[in-house]
Image (cartoon, rainbow, N blue to C red; front, side, top):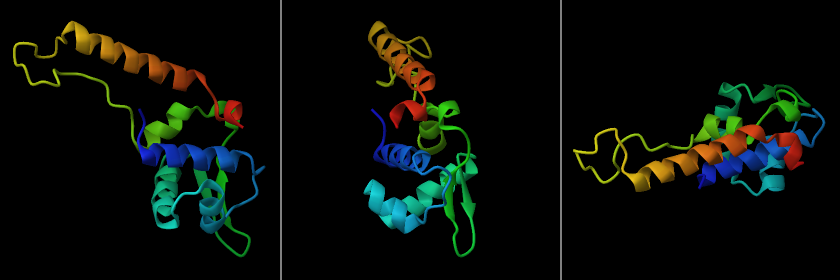
Length: 128
């Protein structure tokens, strides 16, 4: 349902949320979350651009969660990394359908909307 990258990002955010604002190195995060370090660096950059984490430089630097875990939703994290793609046009390429989805694709898109809503209404705090 979500990409491996989005799952790694969720693991990272949830783990950082449990660290009480103490900066964590990429290496420490990678070991704790079982995310490959090189891959994690790219994920952390995207999370930083989205304002979900902050990098602190220096001897005791590292990454910290930027915000209250109760105010961050799993959907915020997923949207920062690899948003859930809704069905806007016929996936089968049937031109007569255009942007009017057939009953099957409408139901599937409605299910995706329900998933997004569930992720939006949840918080990282609930995952700790």
